[in-house]
Image 1 (cartoon, protein in one colour):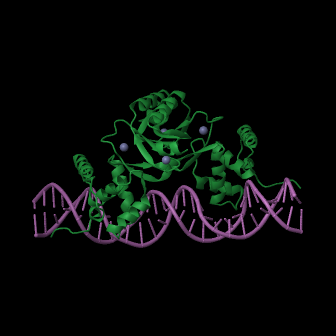
Image 2 (cartoon, chains in turn cyan, purple, green, brown):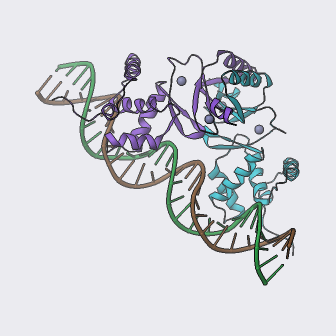
Image 3 (cartoon, helix red, strand yellow):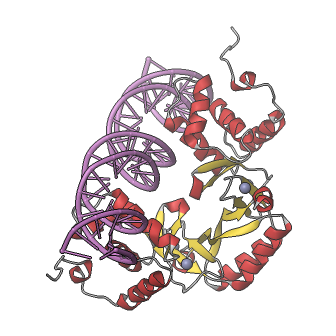
Length: 160
Length: 160
DNA sequence: AATGCAATGTTATAACATTGCATTTGTGCC
DNA sequence: GGCACAAATGCAATGTTATAACATTGCATT
Ligand SMILES: [Zn+2]
Ligand SMILES: [Zn+2]
Ligand SMILES: [Zn+2]
Ligand SMILES: [Zn+2]
């Protein structure tokens, strides 16, 4: 008998990120981890929320397909995705976003707009090298692939 | 009648930050705001916690002197202090720290150590100008005086 | 069949933060 | 002093975010 659990893909029209999901799945497998159905569904929801999404909103949407889902369901999936470098958490907003980059050899800047809460992920080699040099001089060492910054987005800059 | 509320100063020996508190009070007054007793006590606790403190730990300590204190008591004080530039919130850790700087014409870097959770506030003109230039090129504008970064502190770097 | 193990399910609770409204306190004015 | 007004505080309830603790499932190995 073929599975007929109504999957999240079928609820919404599109699926332009099937490719990205497949790539993510492959890269997990390459590291010996597995992008299970739940994790894949969470990642897909992240892909559909370019400006980030809150854990409990995620939970609400996951519940449409999996009524039994609970907070640990989504937090575990998010932890996994973050470990695998497929997602990031924006601390100050309790917001989760999919990573748009292939790898994090260069750390990313996350520009969080204080007006509209939009999140933009930016990779800037020059800034990052200046940063890690300064930190090194002060005896610190850059550790995470994420640097959060409050910055007005272009839209909000032009409005005001 | 003179006030004789047991104030927090008298509980602990020292008071080396009376100066800083007085300066803070003056700068509030200069802006037409007032550093009331509660706010001053919270700020003092922040001064005594160089690596940051959680809101509910703060609450517990405030309660020693003011048994009636409740979450809004400390969150309101923290909001005030942050507005006045006297404190910062470290989003990813839900940690509050006193600001060590006289003013925020230059935004600060907050180095949050992922090992020991210590927080160091650093002002680096060169990094910050590189940063705001790059952001401007991308159409964004640096907005807040706070940039959080995960970076191992010198102590944790040397240990491992 | 028994064991091991990763993932998931389930329930409860911890930890963090805000809202709404009543009361008190401070401040300028008469 | 007495009054009006705004700012600050007290207080209870609630909202939001995250984890702890324990049970179960499914599949691979012995
Ligand atoms: Zn990324
Ligand atoms: Zn914006
Ligand atoms: Zn500061
Ligand atoms: Zn450290």
